[in-house]
Amino acid sequence: MGNSYTDLHESRILLYYCFTPIADPTAIMLWQRALCEKLGLTGRILISKHGINGTVGGTIASCKAYTKATRQYPGFKKMEFKWSEGGAEDFPKLSVKVRDEIVAFGAPEELKVDENGVVGGGVHLKPQQVNDLVAERGDEVVFFDGRNAMEAEIGKFKNAVVPDVNTTHDFIRELESGKYDWMKDKPVVSYCTGGIRCEILSSLMKNRGFEEVYQIDGGIVRYGEQFGDDGLWEGSLYVFDKRMHMEFSDHSKQLGYCQHCGADTNLFHNCINGSCRKQILLCDDCAASTATAHCGAEECASVASETSGAAEATGASETGGAAEATGASGAAGVTGTSGVSS
Image 1 (cartoon, rainbow, N blue to C red):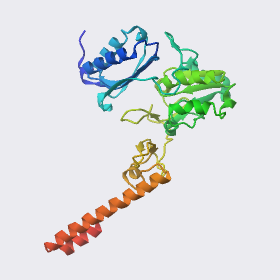
Image 2: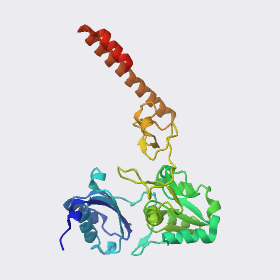
Image 3: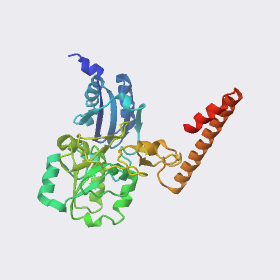
Image 4: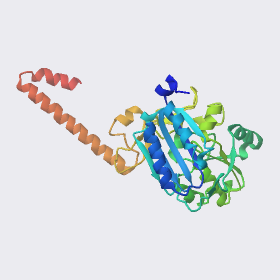
């Protein structure tokens, strides 16, 4: 059967991962790169000895062809693909790479996988089972955010514990810090965007004495698809493409606010200091002003101030030069008045 008009002219994004032993990650990488190039897909794919982790976008026809071809590899036969709005234009290019880990927790040798997935991970719960667990055990249940702390600024599960982490590399340090020992005998529901981070995080937690650990099947995405904003999730979801965030309904709770003025916003911006890699929540006005387009750190605020001052000086110089040039032509008075008014 041929492709429909919709398949050829509408686009989607695929999100997927699979933990399975891969004997030759480089061979899989070359195959995946060639397949995506042939189909015109863009996005990012990571491959390691533990499996594959990818997000790609393209036409519906190309996405269908990709899922069919990828599942031909025995280890990926049962891999699930999540379909989302978007397309190839949401990614600047195609990147397919081999890494020690498909999610960089810094524990490549601790993680064990077999043909059934991660060995020793948390119990998978369907979205309805998450609600059932909370209904049964109430406040005893602890939601544990498995994402970078900044992602929780715009959305999280109600009363969730948000660890102080900037990258996944920070989780082991946090788990071993003693801060969360009070949770070790409680039912802990770990969660992340699509589920992959919690596959690893839940196993790391169990290895460190957390007794009853769960993870949400399909992550926040799957939960939001089923319950929208009428369940236990609150706010917006941070996503790793040019959209930056997504909502599950038209009545999502507003959690994000501008770091400088407090206005509602769900948009993260890079700090104006080029040597600072921090992303911060800024409203459009504060992001547009060089004086406030910084993360708040003293060094970054100084860079913003200097940049803003230089921009003002340049603007004043250019305005002055224009006035002088106009004055030479005999209309200085009119132009000077106009320049001040503006």
